[in-house]
Length: 289
Image (cartoon, rainbow, N blue to C red):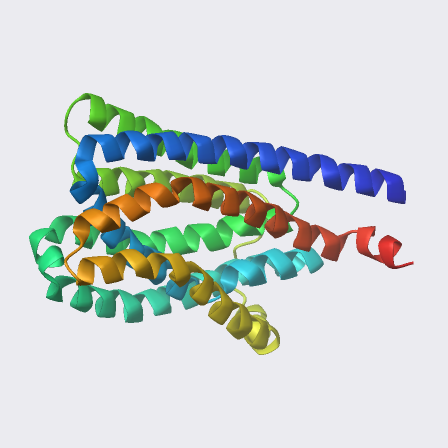
């Protein structure tokens, strides 16, 4: 394949990825707006507090594996199975450690005591969310943007449909809204697992997993720290607001951040696709030469 074809294919896929993410974020934003109107600022504040804890827990549980999977599976597809097993191992260990700590903190707060079921659901969602994100990003490294776009749209559309149903039927509560989100991520996980199972060997290779830990640990640690700091920068604000008894303000902040987060996530998704493709194609070397 010549350089012009490589470049055209690269930009065509980036354009499709951007379109899929814009559509997904538009659907998600509309669903969030309708949910906010149904719950009011206080109800939205409860969700914002719980999901802020879940976002931080999600970042901690990922252990930087999203970056590792995108980058290194693109460089060597034969390592895909080892990376999947490594992801499940490290994320599960991290989940055991961090979920317990977050539950202790959450249930020690008055808002957590008043919303035990919703808090429990949100915190248990985080490990599923983390593993799904880590494995889903591997689809980009395997050059399967269509499958990646599909699982993103599937999760957003399914969640939006559930939100629409609970709003229309008048059953909108923080617990049901968070449960709807959890169901959408379980569905996304199943489709990601199916996509990976059809394309890679998931047989346990002890030496392969050891190789991943040995060669990628510094890369994991570096991206782990950056991911946690980035995701926590926004999530910490609703937590601090609720800590000071400002539940309504937390809800208003969360509602106002919908569009800002949408714009940020589109550019972030494009970068997520660009890196593994530059690693595994001739685009970078052609540009340098």
